[in-house]
Picture (cartoon, rainbow, N blue to C red):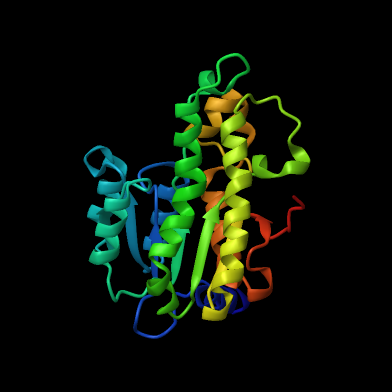
Length: 259
């Protein structure tokens, strides 16, 4: 009986039993890694999932997942293209979004982020995708989020955006800088949307064994969290995220990160 009750409590916590109207989540960068796992878990729990990717034609795993779940809607979104964002906003006009998850991100070519070979073009790309795009998309879809029941916007950051740990060693200057910038712009955004009742979560997923992580640390990523472990923990954190933690830099386990 205790197990059953615990399961029911978790379901309510995650917004799975909140009336007949299913909660809605929008996830950017849904075609692989953490984004794909967000889609998989929310869809399995009967949320309405709006899964976006820049190139759906090549998003085979995402399309296969959508074929199994009628509650997944696939949308094309290039997060750094103003016209693409505008098209999505028009397509979703009047549709409440309970949780907006800004997950899309890029590492950038490592060879372009090393002393002696710094590329301004790669810097602009990484900063655009990782820092500007989440702010721009959050701003563009603010009315959709404010019209929902849960009113939450999440930015997936990284522990590498923590200034206190900026000791170097991974040679991805631009990526590190972009995550620090993301933390700051979303913190400011959190203050501005607070009067609307919107909560902003800035959450680091921890060290997770993904393709991007392996580009940085190689096979050592095998010792890291599995994607389903990180996403499960982040979903629980998002579900219970209170207004007094809006704009705080949080680890996936709920611990506040000094930065």
